[in-house]
Length: 433
Image 1 (cartoon, rainbow, N blue to C red):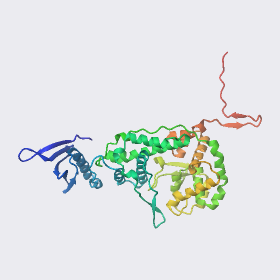
Image 2 (cartoon, rainbow, N blue to C red):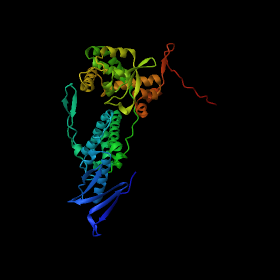
Image 3 (cartoon, helix red, strand yellow):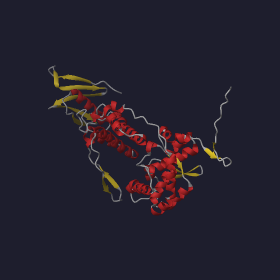
Image 4 (cartoon, rainbow, N blue to C red):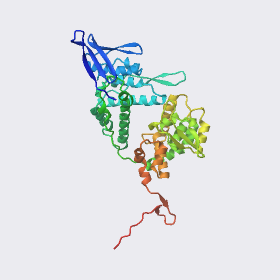
């Protein structure tokens, strides 16, 4: 509940106003500020302990608002906010806000989302202002051969959060899709929308809603910027289908030379899993469902599926037996020496293998997933089923790629005449003369 801020002068013993003191009232919060040197200070007592808050500003209104933010944080034991030292309103950098956002206590399953949101916010600023791209990542190799990313400073960190305006977001959207048409433009629109949604989350879910973090600028206009409209697209099934069949023809050789890459291709083409889902796939995901085996895609302690969508995907017997024969770990379906190798190394090997076969498309593993979606759409003739099998959070995404496959009539070849007739011929309307 919002309360009106009231700042009053305090009278001294002689009955005159004391210019070095102010009485501040805001709802249940009431305190006295004192001018010390060039800035206001306030002493606040909680549980018998006195907290000296140096507000570092000579403006009484700014000082009062900062003190209220910090007092609210003290009552909720948000000490990182109290000692943040951010007392100059409206002049904070992207890096400072990201540190506050990342310091929240969140479940392990939200850690990935937190890092992604921070990256997206910096991307909006970097692209819109034409700053240099982030430096290449540096890694520290752990004892278990896994890698830990070492954060590298970038130009976007130094930008003030006051830059987060409608004009900045629109400039970001323009630069993302400038000169791009067709599928490339559609991918750029989707990337721009994803970054904007994640960038909003940095403020909407925790910083602004809680009202605890002091000195944040008014970013309400930044949150109100609309997403880019999607242009309807169709999945070119006729062009990609023969290439997918060529992939299946060469799979036996890949099975012998690189079993991990072989499983990666199978889970994409026969189960429609995303690249990240394949890297996180556990053996415990394979469960029984109504007498059949399915892959139950679900969150783990450190990872959540895209769109937070759980789903169960049918698993055929041939693929299941391949998993049993090639999986050498108790936990992961795709064996690898480290998490980095499972998430990056295998994908690179799969891409090189597909290029060696002449694969002409820019995307590799994701095109196999879309091919799987086209099979589901063609067999079920139902967009809802295709959406559930693919785990799309928005049904419009499914409609963009597979609506034309569902609407396309099926044909049968009649050997008697050699002609082609639709399974459900259209009824001819009778015309009255």
